[in-house]
Length: 230
Image (cartoon, rainbow, N blue to C red; front, side, top):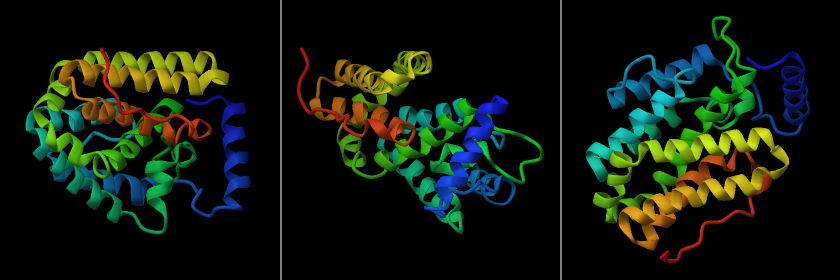
């Protein structure tokens, strides 16, 4: 749960920014988020309990589809993701799935308040899918065997990249952009070591980088390079 001062700061921020951008509103968890998440889970055959509070398990289930079904798993996920986006109305996709502040201030949620980690972890998943289902789709599909091997064999290493980033960025937020770059490079190395293909390593780097892009917009100068590693 967030502290009183932190929550107050969030509410003030949302109020100020919402006056400039009406998309920055609280997520309607009962009528939008829960409905659309349930639809996604059903489409993917996931456990009905997966969602914001179990974002780690949701990530595991999504990445397992890449591991088990390779490019077809990506295709299934992207189809479900498209329907998930279309499920939302009145700008609620942004508030519930791409704006952590919308989740922190969520309404109609049965007195449940999402934590900062839950909000950040949940929106990171969908922001990564924007890349996976867009510019990254053909790259992975063209190297599906080695790409899927990372999700089969390097899950613990990916979670360590994530954990290191979370720990370091919280301890030293003034250096968040440096940690964004380190985390992206961590993923680059995992995919490079598995495939020895610069385009697949580039995919891995962007998979992580785009996940943190919404959370740390001040780090927009961080890019993934397309080159070989020794």
